[in-house]
Amino acid sequence: MCPGFDEAGNPPYGVAAAGIGVASAPQMTGDFAVPAKVLLIGLMVLCGAASAASACQKKSNPLLDDNFRNADPGWGEPDNIASFTAQGLVMTPPVSGSAWRWDGNFTMEHADWCIEEINPTKLPDPADEDSVGAAGLWFWGKDMLNFYTATITLDGSASVNRLNGGVWQLVAAPVSSPAIKTAPGAANELEVVTNGSSAAFYVNGALIIQVTGHPPPGGGSPGIYAESGPAGTTWVFPRAILY
Image (tube, one colour):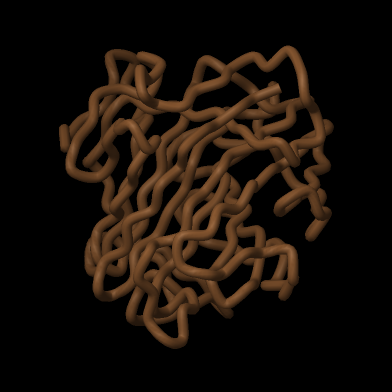
């Protein structure tokens, strides 16, 4: 990983790890051993994102379509957190931590942000957020301290959260859905459709959650978000498309 900011002084790559900086998150548990998510500030690389899937609401004329085999330069250089492979973008956040990448060249004021996610091939029992973490979409992103996430966990739940000035806030409590594929190695298509201050979260084409939020001017940037459990978790994102 490369500590530091980009040439404009902006941190386009984020990592969160237990024990470094504190951002409290009442009512939320997950990638940390305590009910708080923690930010590691200072480890970053130029980042990006996009989305994909046959179940996406839009089907044609994407602004960005990446399978990561020859990754768009906006994603930045690979490191020990994120790598570009023949299988797609592979993310391994720090143990009991989280990581994210985004692309500041695109905005989400009126957008369809759709990604494919592959579950880890080996899962504990139970495979919930405490043991595995979560994965999904990073959206309405202003910077590494201000963004939203729409994620799934492998116990079949979906939720929307917000990092607001470095403090995690619950936007939409976890909702169980049969649309979420929880089997080891299964693929899920995750999608956020934004329209001004409203956002709709779809999983495999099924509408799960609708929220009203506070996007930054222009809708902010799109990205990809992932967490690790206490044993470490590797997530694969084969494709990302932005309409």
